[in-house]
Length: 356
Ligand SMILES: *Cc1c(COP(=O)(O)O)cnc(C)c1O
Image (cartoon, rainbow, N blue to C red; front, top):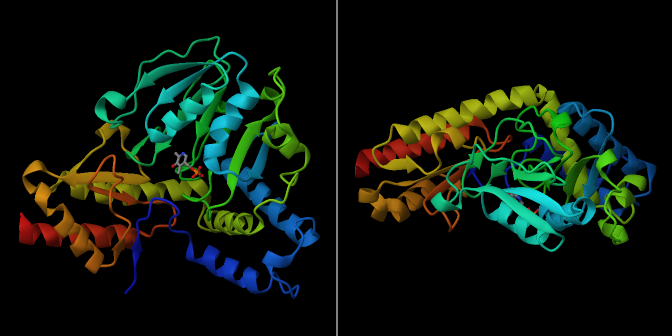
């Protein structure tokens, strides 16, 4: 049976990206060797990383003055690299979930952290508004999409200090005005590629301002200078990222992707809002287009396991909610086809008919 892959990460990728990766694993562009067994210094791999970088810049319309890096260590390593490289004394953070909290924890090792607002009071079901970012903060850090709670900041904020965004789970899901950010980073494994590579888009002029010594590997300037090849980069994941970027371009770029994402999310949110059994967990004006979280209403709580089994029998994969929210989470990343969302909605309707 065809699976409907709602995994939160690692997660669904475009079929063509997977197929082209499989081909390159057997023989890269007919060179008689696998992508797995060539030097990262070879011209064949250089062409891969160059194309990935160029596509990234093109699709997100990245202005002059920014660098695109492909690193290891996941978004989690960025939680410490960001303050290591950029915090002299004080930084501001928006606390919108577990990932934001992890970033805050690391930043506290380097200086004063000002948490300007938090939605912890309501289990991170909303994006705080109406806060002030102190003008003397070295930067302001946000998590644009809160993968676990299904909330998202879908506009590019105006900010009085350099804005830094963890976009692990919504990168390339919509057009972004990159010039409003000093840095954007994330793990690839939600919306961009397989696990193992981390993208960083950084405006060069924010670097080199802190006085502390930075270990070579943790210094962004090292990776800029060496074109992401100070050490051996994650070659295969970078190849798949390149293929995913090609796919995004082929279907019309991020504006087209955003339209599709809005359509998919509307189908599922409408089903949830019109349901007798299910209810969404995130506040409506904070809802994510990427991770859609819902639970059974109180009187049906005991039916959650039964629905999970029912959905599984219909080919749904990865819809169990994160343990800190419970219920269900459908991740509707770029590569998820509309048909999968429709299949999930049909599943909810059929279950409701028999159980509500
Ligand atoms: C998954 C996720 C992370 C963690 O990414 P790793 O690459 O596993 O370190 C960080 N932030 C967000 C928003 C995520 O969704």
